[in-house]
Image (cartoon, rainbow, N blue to C red; front, side, top):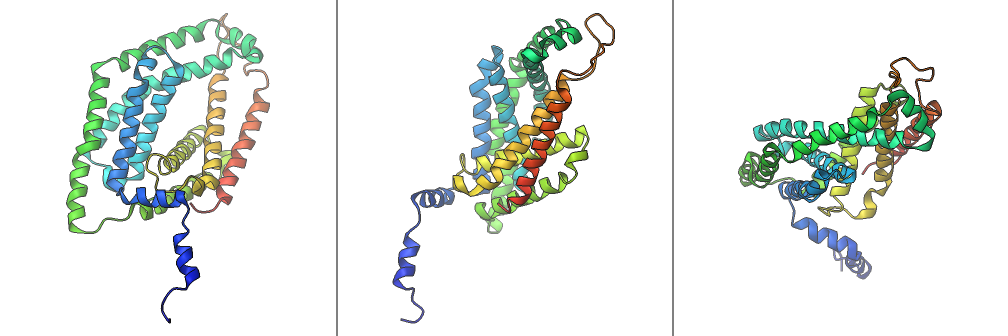
Length: 310
């Protein structure tokens, strides 16, 4: 009959994949505020999970806490129209305090790992003597004092309380009573594409970017990658295959720029262990490795640019 769907159309409407049906069903349970809460509480849970190992000096646990904090900040930024309030601005200052000691410990671990590689061992010994081990010990002690402090525990409790029922949540509930809220999937698609366009815009002159601009680009790529992962794993708004075309180059860009930053940090010119300038102020193969990483970063950037929208 006119106006009625055909048998083929009716069958097609029923032939959604199991993964698609699961994603659709799970998305119904979340609005933007609930999605943010789930992602953010998962981040706080990861900090708690790795706390004792980090206090014992486990480098991987330190790294995982830093990842969790970055994921939390990415989620706040992604849902900023909902989440940012006076309390978050206060928490952000406390997070910066914690990140300072975590970052110093992580950087010491990375530099020492470079120095222990066979090709760099002699150069590092000549440039620093035993200073790197002493610096790592100092930075880890400072980090452990921070992680065991009352200030840290107050921060974790304050973050949990803010995520579950802070001023942002009360404001969102008031607004939701007045007007319909934007669907989570539509909001996420729009925001992910906005972040991707900004990444492409900021990376246009990647070949000539200075250290600080390259660092900001890396952070943006990292946050973009983490939100792609959160919206397919923690809050399954999208299927795993939907973002593979943008996730892969974003991850590669972030990692390559991170490796370049680590190499440059390790290769900083300095004084030799005897106190005088050395003839070779850069580690062996530095220029070749730097060029290789730069080419890889440019390739990843082009891949992200050519991948198309989310």
